[in-house]
Image (cartoon, rainbow, N blue to C red):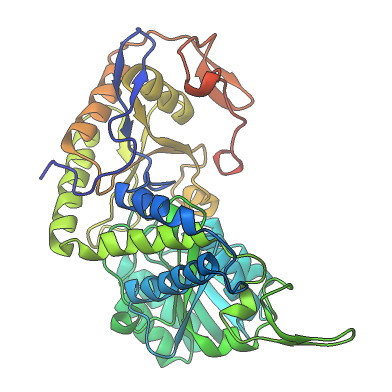
Length: 437
């Protein structure tokens, strides 16, 4: 199946190439930030006239805004199969959610070294510290290694990705949850890469928490969520101290509210919550089997096409892993990943990601410490998008290169790039991102 399953804002945007042509922009960087769904933009536009204070006003607009916010909370919780006793805390993104949980976990955390930095670094400040396990060569061996660590005891929480942001692979969640629970540990799932591609349910998997970002779910308006068991979150120190998180304040004392208010001090991101709920509605309405079939066809085309190019290697964690989500990372022998990404953008109109993807330990363990290129597809991607990328990689290998590319501050760019930019801007290389170096 080659047609997009969802309509996104910007699907018809064209971009200038170095040869003077303009072509439709091909966005194969969904794993970083997915474009906004048209339905998300429409709902945000509809909510804007009623934008007002949430939880703090008696006026009509404020009442509408409060209802929008709390309805969004309920929709987001339902989207991930929240149980009756679970709580949904609205935050900024996955990183925010996992830092919040790290402040609440009452013991030691167990995590694998394959994780995104957002699911590695926060646990280092957890009350009980963290144990980081090296990933084994197979899924079966990795599960055995995880169980052996849990048998040793002393872990309150296992933190696991729902899908790797480097390879799109994952451990079977049912096995991880069963093993962790058998040894008295809870499980948090980093759903950042998973939820845009697969259905997930806390109730169905038995997982205790899930963290995710709106900007990965076609809702790039600065909202995310931590959803899961209430008890730790009700007793944890407030994530932010301020208005809205309290029941009572005196000159010398404070009585904090329970979650979610306990961790949502300040004026909440109403439009972000509305956007996240709209995206959840759109994704929940899709036929899950059709969406997975669409994505798998694109991934197979990507992997097959790239593997046929001389000098290309495609990253893989485990030979026995299940079907990956729409994330494919590759390297071309003798070519700097940043240079190839800059070329694909400037001469083929294709956006990909290059670097180490905020997963330095994983890239090091794969032997790809110098970085790689990542192409990631989504529900708005098509077979034509994949063909454009493959044509571009083959053109590079064939030496069909027009631009003069230079490194500036660690980032590759076209020397004296004169392509026009919107809004009166001038194109300029950006500083190298911390995850790219």
